[in-house]
Image 1 (cartoon, helix red, strand yellow):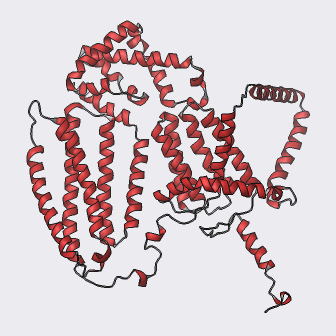
Image 2 (image 1 turned 90 degrees about the vertical axis):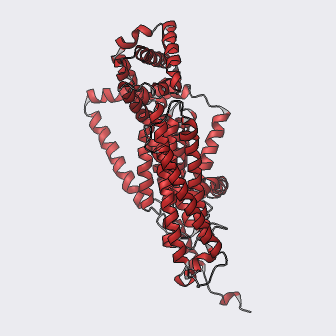
Image 3 (image 1 turned 120 degrees about the horizontal axis):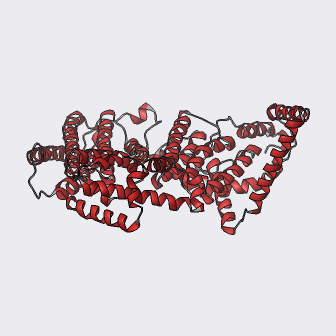
Length: 551
């Protein structure tokens, strides 16, 4: 047995390890089972406090989407300030750019979808700052782990309070504090040397003090707001100090394994004949159906009473489902023993043929949606359908890529979810109502009145209302007067909202509403006759009943 005196002294090595762990630039590998907590720093505590204040101003006390835009724009910078793991990669700046673009869109005209996307980007920002790769499943897991991570982090904060005492003056801190102190001292002397400037400065400081006192006097805290503070701090700490370090799908992926581990051993798959015959049968079925599709729905004039909703709406949905099912079938075929079968190239050739048929099938879905749009115009849901079909078509391309490059199912799942996330983000940024009703207005002015029904039966946001004024030149009197009444209705709503205190809060500001309000004010003469509520209601009722014939 070795005596205690002869045991090696490892205290110095432990100190070096702890010092490297606490460094902000250290590449720390934290075990997923029992992660070591980095040392607590003042900047981290400051970041948590500022995140609580920011969330209180923009969410709890906020009244609209401008507040959320400010949150999504500023919060990533605060996470960067407080993160104990600063391993910035290219993904960090990409997330920052798309978050800034989303914030700009929300400041113009926000929506619930954009708010949800913004919170997802906030979690992605925390991941990117910590050096994590941004896979969609991992973003969801990172958000969920904040529950446990916040608890662990708060316990660590409580045990690390003594570390925050100003025992050591950091040189890099003095490089900021000393210049600011010098500016303050000499600036005060220069102000005092000029009586007029000193008087103005004193008055400005008095006004600021009175404003702060008034704000504190009217600051009515409630227990719900205190709970919100605690919840925000909990989540912020969980984002800064994750307890899960490994990708949730890492154990199922072949990425990072050696070439010898990935090299397949040739062996005939028992299911190869069944899979080959399945592909041959599907190729024949799709070929026959595509011939039928082109014969019945392409290059023809549809008769009166044609069932547009059944063929172009419900039918397109079923074809989209078949495309999605095709991606699943292809993914299930090319996996496991099949990838080691020496006859794999022949199976791949069949897969290329069927994949090409699927892409042609996607074109038929676009055609059916085009038929419906031609029938009675564009809508929000038809825009959603176009984005959805595009996501499914992208899924088919990804499956083809997977088969060609021998990727595993985890790769496919990650990229499918990434494609879906990109489509949702692009849809959130798209000015849907503006594009939809620009198309409908153009059709109505060209003499095709059917799209006017979409202006009547669907809610329209500020962007959509902005493109309606050209209809005031329509030859159809019912449509022209109905649009006048709609503009008057929106103007009356603006006047009511101005009288509501909540709408005066900066967090409720929307540039689109401001532009529309100014535009309506400039054309007041066009809609002023419908300020009378009974006259306005009569014109709107007449308009709705007239255009409903094209619904």
